[in-house]
Image (cartoon, rainbow, N blue to C red; front, side, top):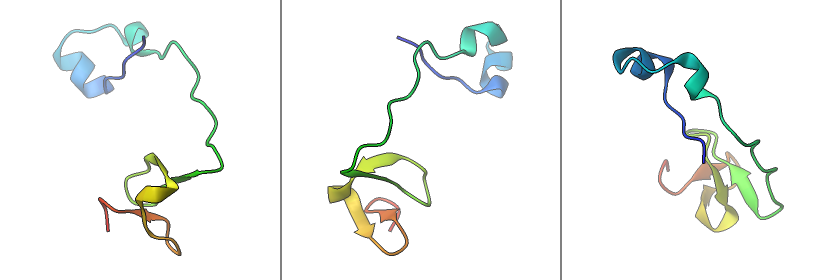
Length: 60
């Protein structure tokens, strides 16, 4: 499976930029999911703390 590392972290660890590519495309957001407007994670609606502003429980 592909993993992600920032370019800055890769440069510190001497990782090739070509190794930073993801192997798979991201799945589409499902009907029971939302994107947090603070942390930008895609989470299940059960984690929604502020529906009006689409903020997850961890960021609220």
